[in-house]
Each structure stands twice: as C-alpha cells, then as structure tokens.
Amino acid sequence: MPDNLSIAEIQSAFFEYRANFSEPIFAYWFERRHGEIVSTLHKALARWHVGLENVTWNQAPKNAGEILLTFGIPSLFATIQVGLGGVTMTAFNPDWSRAAELTSLFQNGLEALKKSTAQNLQSQLTTLGFHVSPTAKPFKDIVGQFVNVNALNAADAVMYGFSVYSKDYSFVIDSSGVIAGGVFIKLIRSFAPERQFEEMASALRSDEESVLQRLGLKLQ
Image (cartoon, rainbow, N blue to C red):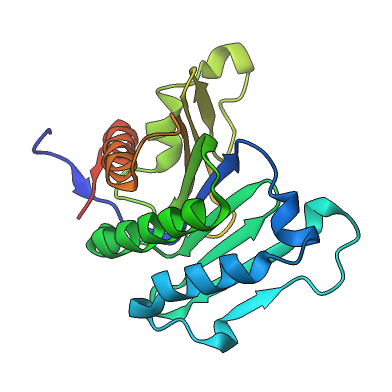
C-alpha cells in the first residue's frame, strides 16, 4: 500500500447480505412450522441478547414475497430477515473494528437457519455502501482522472462519478447526497453458496481498500 495515502473519513455506512434458498420454504410457513425457525434462530442469537421483543413479523402480507420474519440485534445495529425465498442480513454503520463480531453473528444466524429449514443456498450477494468526507484535494479533481471530461463536455460539472462492472464484482463512485463535496461508494460482490462469512469479509475489505486507494485514501 502506498505511503502517501490519507485516512478516509467514512460516514453513514451500511452493509447488506442477501442469500437465496435452493427452494422457497413454503412448508415452514403455510404448514405453520415457522415456529421451528424462530426457536432455532432465537437460541443461536442468544449471546447477542436478542429478546422476544426483538422478534417481529409482517402481520398482513399481501403476497408470498412480503412474508418476513425479522430478528433485531440492537447491540450491533444489525437485523436478520427471513423470507420464503431467502435471507437478508444488514448492519448499519459497520466498521472493521466490529468485523469479527458481525461475522460471527451472521455466520451463526445463517447456520441456524440452514439447519432449521434443511435448505442449502443457491447464491450469496453482499453490498457495502458508505459516504466519504472531502479531503484536501477536491474529489471532483480526483474522480475526474477516471472520466473523459472533454468527451462529455463537462468541465464545469460540480462532481463526476463512474462505475465498473465485472462478472462477480462491481463498484460505484458517485457524488454524495449526504456530505457536501463528498463521495458515495458502493461495492457489490457475489459469492459461491459455500463461501463462509469470514472469507467474504476478507474479500470485502480488499475491495474497499482497492477503491479507496484510487481516491488517494486508506482505511484507519
């Protein structure tokens, strides 16, 4: 890593993990077996002090896609949502100092869910988004290095942005709608069904470091 990088001031970060089941778990809901999922997950999340008040569900779903069972984990500002087709896990304002705890939480929750539903995963997708405060050098000038300003006839633009897409990974660098003069970064990566959270976290950190380096920044 270059020595002349500045520490990125990251704000309003969010992480989302989505996994699809190999098959929808219709039987566990319509045969009223969802109590098995609730019991198994509640036990698996006990060490994070998930109480009964942290377990909720959609009382009046209009269709099968709206059926959701939600576990809130206040201590980590995280949630686990189980639907008929898969699971979504989120964390708000995550930082790498909490990565080990979040990784343990999500892996334990996922293993408990797979056990209680007897389902394997079909796919896994992670999204990490965050805003970065301005640095000494304006982000317009930094991001402008990756944009053909003349071809766009946009020399007077307030900010530039760009995105890159590959088979398993994509990232976006755009103007921040939260921080004046800042940028918003979103990293999206898909993983094979057998990959563990620890492996995914390592890949995400490398992705974040790589994108920040393009902006002359590094993680703290």
